[in-house]
Image (cartoon, rainbow, N blue to C red; front, side, top):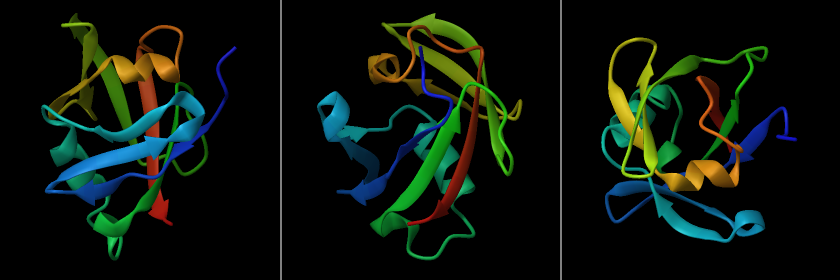
Length: 113
């Protein structure tokens, strides 16, 4: 069973957003192909987000979620999502470290660390 809410702490490393999560053996896992731009928008009101912020995510809505990612299609073992019906971004197979299958929706919120 998936956790209801999950938390990671993305930060900037050499010009891209990455995160570490020792519980699932990920170190400097990069966000790529449209997702960095989504994160830039999500954290635009947070001070020093590039040094790290809290990203809460869930396949179900939760109080204070800020954006909704909607599944579009699978490609190259990853999955494309649109954020609030606008930009598209690809989430790599690391997604399956948190979900058994690609959720149809992912709700996200960014907070100061």
